[in-house]
Length: 496
Image 1 (cartoon, rainbow, N blue to C red):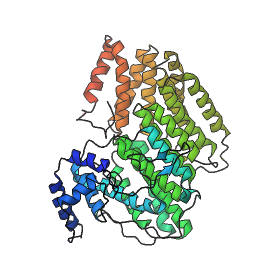
Image 2 (image 1 turned 120 degrees about the vertical axis):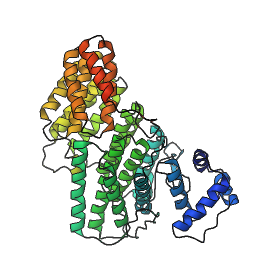
Image 3 (image 1 turned 45 degrees about the horizontal axis):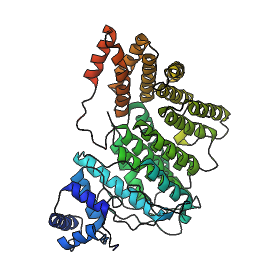
Image 4 (image 1 turned 30 degrees about the vertical axis):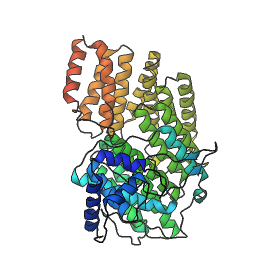
């Protein structure tokens, strides 16, 4: 017992709207349903959890996580409730590093946390619950805590799986996969399933297969609770990292922003457990892209510094090029044109310096020349909001990207169309802008990505200056009719 109030639990308790007596009765009822009929919680115990920081014994934290998840309609973990005894990391500036909402665990906790979070997420999927969600962790606090975890935790200095002790993944009562040994053939099938999910996401957006990816990740978390030989355990952690990145990207794609961020952190943990530092860095770069999309480019730059530092020394040039394009996009969003151009130049040099003599990891095989051009187009289109002369470069790179989009990745093509249309509006070429906007619009009906609609809204704003034109007026009407209605989008949704 800390003697200090548990502010996380208190805040969520206030959101839930229960009385202490109601929560005590529900804990007893839920615990009995989860196989613990002997539990007898009362009002005074609930008060001690909230007001005095007492951490109850298992299974109470898991029971509370399940109750708050169902009540609030979003994933609430034991960490979110402040019911995990945390270590406080020491920063180089003498301060401590514990960031609210950031999931940081000891190595043996990763499989359990992965299973818990995905189990709760699946429960929400199954019951069709949608809530307001939690606030995203602030970029500086998020990156500071992750930096300490990556660099100062003595248990993680060696990039290798911790195989001296078995991993104990505690069941959470939902979608538990029984731990059992698996062989190389099963892992190969899992690795293939990742490729299938990744291709589907690139073609159709994250909405349609998110539940399947989360379910697969939940099962892999159960598999990780069994200690396999080192070479198999590494591969299994790699599958977990890849699935967690996909789950995060798909969650971001449909506007579940705090959920996405937590999956990116899970992915970084899983990659580090498997000894794959470049994968951990790439997972964190996804969180940076998310921050730029949400209008927080300064926090994205903090995360990119962390992603580069966490990736280690053995990062392939093409991977480094990809990381540079994300940094350039963040710089463009802040109006830092000179820095953006310098960073994009470095990305180009790195990309062409990759001779292909070392096969890229599976998660980098979708970053091709078209993607380099597409990110350059997006960066210049973003900079054009501050410096309209950048629009001509955005058009140039969008045209080059579109010429190479022949691999069925429809979502990326939609983004290129929208970058081109926006650049054309900024460059005072409404006729060409109308053409590319319509190409994007006709493709969006078969895509489940909410991000494409967010990007369309940004482009729609640029049409206002041409509303007197009959052609653009008609385009505006068609966009308004096609745009999904925004039903009370909360903090777990992408902004308008």
